[in-house]
Each structure stands twice: as structure tokens, then as C-alpha cells.
Amino acid sequence: MYSEKVMEHFKNPRNVGEIENADGIGEVGNPRCGDIMKMYLKIEDEVIVDVKFKTFGCGSAIASSSMATEMIKGKTIEEAMSITNKAVAKALDGLPPVKMHCSVLAEQAIKSALLDYSKKNNVHIDGLEDFDLTEDPHEH
Amino acid sequence: MTKLIYMDNSATTPVKQEVLDEMLPYFNIKYGNPSSIYSLGSTSKVAVETSREKIATTINANAKDIFFTAGGSEADNWALKGVAFANRKKGNHIITSKIEHHGILHTCEYLEKQGFKVTYIDVDEYGIVDLNQLKKSITDETILISIMFANNEIGTIQPIKEIGRIAKEKGVYFHTDAVQAIGHIKIDVDELNIDMLSMAAHKFYGPKGIGALYIRPGVKIDPLISGGGQERNRRAGTENVPGIVGMGKAIELAYENLDEHNNKLIELRDRLIKKVFESIDYVRLNGHPTNRLPGNINICFEFIEGESLLLSLDMEGIAGSSGSACTSGTLDPSHVLLAIGLPHEIAHGSLRLSLGDFNTKDEVDYVVEKLVEIVARLRSMSPLYEKVKEVK
Image 1 (cartoon, rainbow over the protein chains, first blue to last red):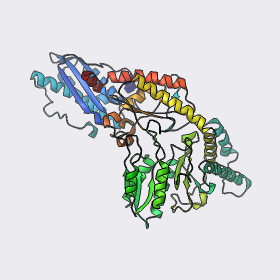
Image 2 (image 1 turned 180 degrees about the vertical axis):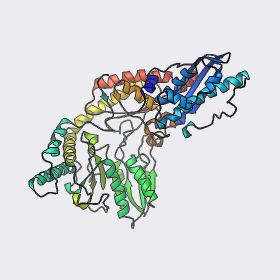
Image 3 (image 1 turned 180 degrees about the horizontal axis):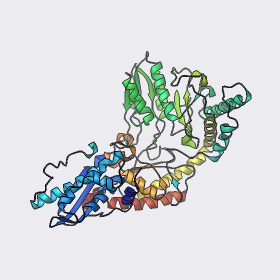
Image 4 (image 1 turned 90 degrees about the horizontal axis):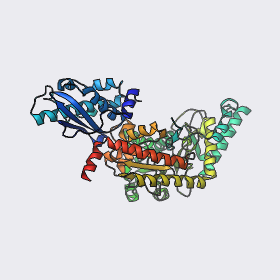
């Protein structure tokens, strides 16, 4: 069902954990639907210097979180903002159609953490103006 | 990888060697069509009738009232659609429960589209149907009550005798989906007032693709499959002779030393449950603590999701199943777990282990050991568990 890459990230997820005094924290998903992703960012000079996650969810939710953290670590905010759910799914060598919402959740988790950072630090991030946290990833 | 530890016997079971040995000649040596008049044909006919007799004896029925089908789902479909369409003039109301197998529930949904009315009876926290609600739901229009013998997910055994009595008093047909029960529980269709009973061979070490429906004489039922005159004109199609032979042998073996098997299974089941409760916190047993299938274990592990639990178990060579939404391809977790009142987030973390004749005490201990590690690992990744720790 899953690609080897998904299974590899599920077995050995990267960047699991929390960051104390994180600059941005995002939590998306809903326990009713069976998946919640929480992402912690450490940001210095517009660069994501560290990222950690915690996820309640299925194998692809955990793998998508892990992959998303790898994709944004060391990247600028602008670069992180350009990461789409499709890019996360592609990096995992694809997800089954019923699991695509997991990659949507990963994209939302990044954006939600960046939104938290922008609010706390009163900085503007291009592309977050119309970010809707309440959007249901399952509809994708 | 280590040897597979198979604990998904409610999904299917391996065909026992003795069963396979009986079946094999009917593929390429005794391959005649039972309807053919030459001796090769009658050899097959005799084999089919011998198997029918074995099955009938097991449930205290007459052989002529056992009708072979292509499995449990066909038997369920036939009982419901066959009775509904044959008795439409009498009434259009069917009663079932909220925790039935989809073979029943989706057939009911189909019948609703055809204009029938269906009442879905609630269950209590253990998954036992509400008998008062059942009684009150019966109207002059009610033609059929269909309640499963034992639940496939949580193992709860229903008060079949009482339901049979209620149905008989009201003059309503009573069908039971006994797919999970047959081969594991003693069933007497007369004592329990059962009018129709569905079974499937692959749940008791027989082959897949063969099942049967018991139909009490006098029950008005249309055929589901039309064609040749097989099965007394009630179920067309050339008989699955090897399957039928296998089913007969499997049922014979299952009831040969049923008590001994069940005592062993109950001991293993209760050992696994006890050990899990001793070594893991935030767990919940689903289904009735004692009135459940001998091999059924269904436990929710809070703060983790069932599919990641199954994948992790699979990595350790352990096969189980879950009522999580992610394993069903839908957004909602198991309808059974929701019907017994579990919140969605807890239902997502369910694990069903169904033990069988080939499981051992060592396997049970190994599985618990691995569960402790896996649950701890997944919880360490879970934002929900982190919140609980903060509260503590």
C-alpha cells in the first residue's frame, strides 16, 4: 500500500519531539478524524534553524510530518512557504489517494506554525494572508 | 523477519491440512458435475450431500434445509432480499441492529432504496442489543428480524434465544448472521428459534468462497441467483464441490473437540487482556468482558491511531486488525465502536486480535511485549499524550 519511502519515514521519523521556547507552533487536524499534527519552529534571521513535530495519526500522517520537517529545515521562511502538499507527497514517492489529506495536513502544519511566528513577532509573511486553518484537508 | 504471528482469525483462518486433503481429489480426480447422471457425477453429488448432512447435524437441522452459497455475504444478502421481496404483500419493515456486518447493513440500505423500512436497534456499552427497543419496534408490517449471533469486531455474543423467542411470539422471521459464531459456539436452530442462519467456511479453517444459509421449512423466500435447478431450485449455479467438501470437513473438525479448543482459546485471550492491562495505561477493553467469542480481543489504546499500530505490529511479524478510519478508507472509525458509545478519537486507536487454534502462550507473551514497546513509541510521538502528561 505504501511506498518504501513512506515506510522508511514511518519507521525512522526525523525530527520527532518538541522545541522549548519555539518561535512558532502550529497544530492542525482533528482527533475525530484520527489525525493531529503539531509543528515547532525555531527561526533565526528568517531561516528555520530547527523544526520538530508530534503527530497522532496513521502511517502516512507520521511519514508526511517527518518529510515536511526535513524539507523545511535550514530553509528560509519564503522557501518553506512554497512547499505544497503535492511536493511532500512526491518526496515520499507518492501517497495512496485516500491518504493525500495527510500531505495537506503537513503543508497546513508548516503554515500554521509560520502564522503563529508572524503573529508573535508581528512580521508579515507573504502568502499567509488568506491561509485558512479551518479548511478541511479531507476535502482535497 | 521472524515467523508470522497470525492473530487475525476473525478475518480469515488457514485451511487445515485435513480439510485440504479431503478437498484435493475433487479438483482433478472426482471433478464431475453433481447434476450429471454418470458415476463421476454421482460421486460429486454424494460428496455434496455428505457435507450438507454434516453441517445440518451440527446445528440440529435437516440436511435439506441447508443451502450452499458462495460465502457469508451471499447468505446475508439472500436472507434479507429473498425474504423482503417474497413477503412484500405482508409487510415492508425489517429490524436489525446498528452493529451488524456490512453484509447486512449495506443490504438493508439497498432495501431502503427499494421502499422497505428498516429499524436499526441500539446496543449497550458492551454491544448487546436493546431487547426492549427490539420488542417495541415490531409492528404489523414487520416481516424480518436480523441480528448477528456474535459481533465480528468486539466479539460480543447476542441474546439469540430471547430474540428467537420474541420473533416467534410475534410471528416474524428471525435471521442470524452466524458467520463469526459457527464453528466456535454450539448452535441449535430449534432451541434458539432461528429461521435462517448465515455461515462461511473460511472462519473455521475451511476454504474461502463457500458458505451456506440454513432456511427453516415454511419460510417464504425468493431465490437470489436464478438459473439451473441446483439446491432445490433455490440457488442456481454448479456447486463448488471442493469448497463444499472442505466446509463439511472443517465443521466436523470444529465441533469434534469444541470445548477443549474454546477453553484453550479463552485462557490465551484472558492472558493477553490481563497482561495488556497490567503493562499499559489508558487502555479500554471493547465488548463484553466474558460473554464474547473465545478468541476475540478488542482493545483501545488511547492517544494513538490504529493504522500506525497495525503497521508497527506488522514490522514485528504480528498480524491484527483495527477499527480505525484509516484502515477502512473512510473518515469515520468503526460503526460498531461508535455504536457502543466510544468517542471518535478513542475508536481510532482500536486493535482487534482474534486468536485461533494455532496460537500459543509464547506468541501471546511476545505480542504483549511488542505492544508495550510500540504503544510507548507511538505515544512519545503523539501530541494528545503530551497533553495528558501535562495535566498529570
